[in-house]
Each structure stands twice: as structure tokens, then as C-alpha cells.
Amino acid sequence: MHFINCTLLLISISVAAFGCNRIDYQKERHFVLQPGDLLFQDSDRGNLCEAIEAVTSGYQGANITHVGIVANSQDSNLVVIEAVSKGVQSTPLADFLNRSLDKNRQPKVMVGRLKPQYRPLIPLALKQAFILRGKSYDKVFAIDNDAYYCSELIYEIFLKANNNLPVFNLQPMTFKVSNAGQFHPVWEEYFSELSIPIPEGQPGINPGGISRSPVLTIVHAYGTPSGNILNER
Image 1 (tube, helix red, strand yellow):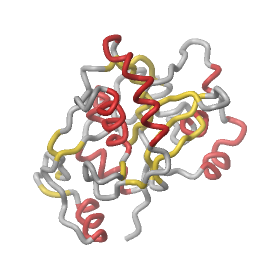
Image 2 (cartoon, helix red, strand yellow):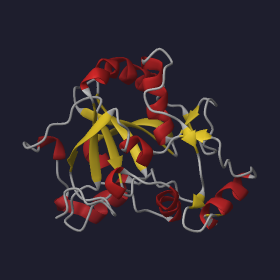
Image 3 (cartoon, helix red, strand yellow):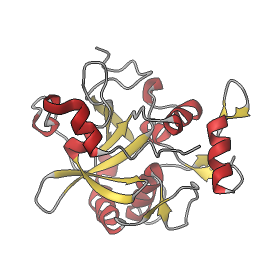
């Protein structure tokens, strides 16, 4: 079985699917993104996304499968620094937001903002994020192997910004469905193809867990992620 990394969605597909309904969300007047905001995305694309949703939980029950951080590019436009299957990269904000839309054609994205006492860390964290661009994607979800999955990238850049003191906490990873107590079959096949054991119980971090962190506040939802009661429309 071929697995599609749910964090990598082709821009060409988005353009073809959404056409003239594509919106420049940066120009929304009722909410203004800030550098350092975290974008939590519900990407319903493929079995791997469903497997992530089955073993993790996001803010208010939202299905969160991906996270990136907002930054200013050299031309002062907002971009999202994220770890996808191509590696750590900068993505134009509109491309990120248009990847996955709800039934009202709004992005299934929630915005998390660090609480005031943590915001001084943002400049150093963003500097570290730009340094890590081009690093490989971490297919095996291992900490400290110089490759990064989406939530590991966020963990790492704030760790470095905070003098190697964690801002977001690692937790034992699980790849089991909670109500069944068994490994999700997609995860069994995924790690079998990599020829490595399932890293059950190893330290890790997931985007849903970060969205529930006490160090940030969910300040906006562009649309409604699946399973979420916030901003229902």
C-alpha cells in the first residue's frame, strides 16, 4: 500500500478544486494573524490522516493532523513554515489555508497564539525555523535524528528558543485505537513498509496535543475542523 503524507497536498490540486472560490484570507479584517501564531489544520486526505485522527485528539475534540507556524518572508508576506514529506519548507499562507476546506468552503484551520509570557520566545523560534528549512521529513517519528515531522518542528524551535527548556512537552506516543487497545492497521502497515518496529511508548508530540497546550490560546477558527464544536456554522 502506498501512503500519502497527509501534510503534503499539491497546490495544483487545490487550484483545480477551488478555482475562483480561492480567498486571500490574509485580507480578512475581523482577524489578523501574527508571526508566531500556530496554524492547526484538519487535513482529510488519505488513510494516514485518518490514522492520526484515530489515535490523537485536538482542541475541543477537533481532528488535527498538521501544524505549522506563521512567519514573515523576506518580502514581508506571511508564510507558514512547516514540515511536510518534502521536508521543512516555507509555504505561502493562502496555499496553506486552501488545502482543506469545510462544507462552507472555509479553511479547516484553527489559530493558536502563545500566551503573553511566552511571546518573547517567538523571534528566536522563527529564526530557528528558517535555519531548519531544507531538513528532511522525519518518517519514523524519532526525536533528535535531525529530521522533523510537523509537531516535532514546533517543539524543537521553541525548545532552542527557550535555552533547551521545553515549552511544549513530549509524551509517550501511541499508535493504538483507544477504544480497541490495538494498533491501528494503517500504522501497522506504515511501519512495516519502513521495516521498523512501531515506536509505541517512545517520546513524541502530535499537533492535536500542541493545540491543547496550556501555553497557548485558540484565538480564531477560519472554518470548522471535523469533530470540533468551536465556531460551528
